Image 1: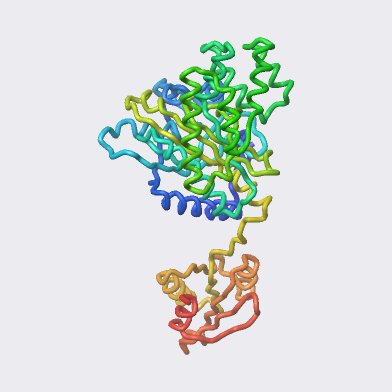
Image 2: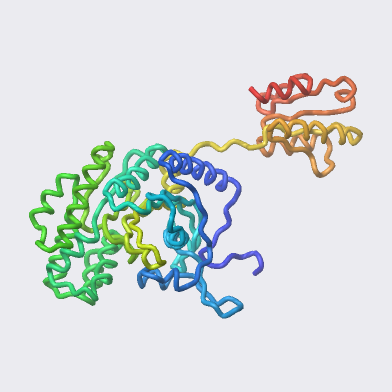
Length: 428
């Protein structure tokens, strides 16, 4: 049917769009406060650009097709790849580079709660710094965002892929199976214990599975790092990852955000381009919504596009945040954007109505008027149905006297005033 949408797509109605705009403006304010500059990478990329180090799961989710020239192209599945590809050509740009974007993307996945095939994210990336301060910066940014929206009961779970990989190597997991095992660990909160074990059986022995299951349950506040240190295998990768976690924890403590953080060996992130510290944020009691924001370090991604540049970042879903804020009753009441409706009391004053509309709009007052030639009664009913707070009534008498009537639609009262007084009234 001509009126139906493809599976997993949705229209955004005006009420939801107003809420989304409010959310996006608050996010923009925090991003700019942290020194991030907004960009918009291309929505369409060459398929090989998207597939580079995306991981097998994501490759299956890419919306791709051949264009009229036979070239394989695809819709972006996240913002990080596009931003990284875009910056790879900026060889002389001053580092560190703090770049952000708020836009939409697509994944050909089975539609589910809080995730359709088209969805929106905010994304903040720092390029050119290997320091733990950069990793902590994007985590602190996410925490500040949650607090700015009034969310109080949440935690940021932090892990490190080097640390987890080093541990896996120490129990005999082969390098060629490492990414597969990591993707299963990433499903720790999505699958049951038995389902996880069944997944692991494709690549691991029973002994290895039991060892991994005991390790990925290890989590806690900053003090858990001491427990992790005691079981730390003496290989370079594990030691390096652990030391990175310790340094990030120090910076988070300096930023007075450590109390919101849990250190968790099960956090590895599913995308194959992550290389170091990784994290996910969950609202307590609302874990079914999924991670409200997530991210981590991806030092090798820029190299794929021709520029070896360390990087770390954070991203959050707009739809998930909207669901959470609605549940927590933290969404504002969005007022009708039209402040005044100019109604004509008769056909002969239509030109005068348009002049008044023009004057009000020039002064920045959101104004509308009748476009259907309705009677004054019908115009008032129309304005009332849209919750427009004020109606300016102009008739022959008002034109001749230069005095107009302003009706307060909530209080059902009227005032007479000049257009100059009217403009001053709305400018207060």
